[in-house]
Image 1 (tube, rainbow, N blue to C red):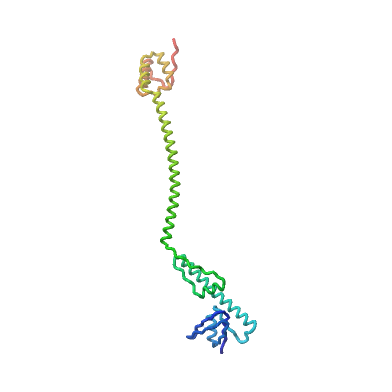
Image 2 (image 1 turned 45 degrees about the vertical axis):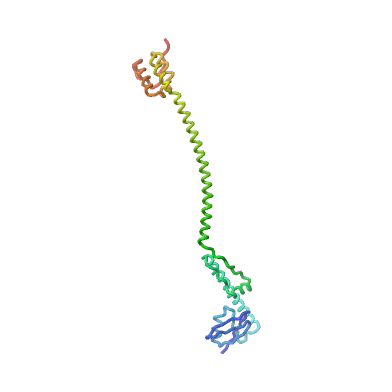
Length: 244
């Protein structure tokens, strides 16, 4: 028993079966043995080939033609998508572009589908070097900003340090002024000539500054008090003796 296979597409389709190559022309009807024909349809239906049975005329045949042409378009759409996916993966892996076949290019134009354009494979080492150089420039810019901030901070610290040194110098000069050697010598010579009443008045008047005198001067004052009153120098300001 025989069967008819229709090629409803606009291109020749080569069918390999039984050790032979059969060329099915566009819009052609080819007769195969029933067993062989069913196998050919099974293997090549995705290319659009359809089986025509006895009585498949008019509306039935038109539906089969439309279904065959739809499968034909779906087949080539899949080939175009696969070609794009392969080249996308190759581009990400820095591998050369694979040019699609003439058939894929033709059907992409026919179906209005976009094919990836050839790309240039970048040298991975050059790209990495470029990235490192850009990172280095960015770090240099950030470093320059930090250096400027450090310089400003250092200037502020230097200014504060200078002001502090001046303040300490002034404080030191004032302290030296209050307890100069000349004043110490005068204190020693002065208290040596004082009697009880004079010493009492001097002690009450200068009580707050005695603690700033050198140790030997304070020792002389304490000894003077011991000699005059027979008692140690008091811890609190004494009351000056009244005039006779």
